[in-house]
Length: 116
Image (cartoon, rainbow, N blue to C red; front, side, top):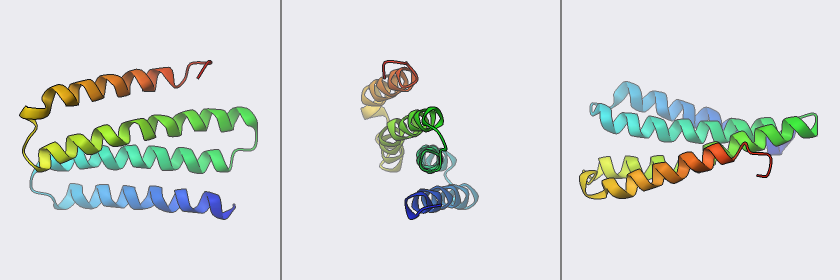
């Protein structure tokens, strides 16, 4: 395993630990859930990156690149959702959140298309 594969593995474990820590200690469950979704998307991105780096062949590498792109697509959307809960401005940014989720879901579906 190269050093390029070690860092995403460390990143995935740290995001998993942060999510579990917040889940166990946060009193506001909706705030905790938005942060856990953010941590989960970072975890998917990091694990996909790690598996891409250690892939033995081209087809597996392409599959894990697509997996890591799904995680990367959801990171900004979950982060914005978490911040709107944190600052208690969800209602005023509901249209933006829905638009971002729609674009992100479409991007996630397209990421496994052969032309992508």
